Image (cartoon, rainbow over all chains, first blue to last red; front, side):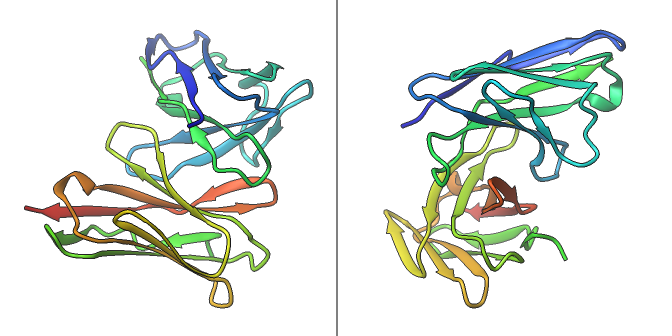
Length: 115
Length: 109
């Protein structure tokens, strides 16, 4: 089945620093990737839709200048959390699909802890 | 009204029983429906997807869809302790996958 690789799986950083998370589709091309965030005991909340070769589409309430998304190729999207703060600590998960109505496949997630 | 609603549970069933998980959605135009399983601390993994009204079976899992009632369910037969997890219902709406809050299932040995 479709494989989505996400790296790193866990990162601890100091407040004010930036963290980059990579998401790769390993065996299919993904024109669209999605970034979700999940706080403990809560569901997945869509942050943004990453489109290859164009600007990402952000959900309401998500700061585009804080969460920078780059989708430079059909197999790679990156999310950079800039000037991270403790409230940004969360589980970030990327996902991708091969076609419009195809199921989403998720990366293994990145556990971000900002101290 | 939330776009996708699930009973958060926890739902507790004995080993070997049938677990029934329910989900309702608000957008009548939705066409694709998915069930994901998420173990604590892990990312979701796809269990089943269903596009047409009726039942779809895959091993111990059966997804049921009723578009008129805007209702989708997941049945797990012969529940095992390893099925204990949070089950997420997701609905494809406007090019995005919208998730319910998840139902926590506990299967007791």
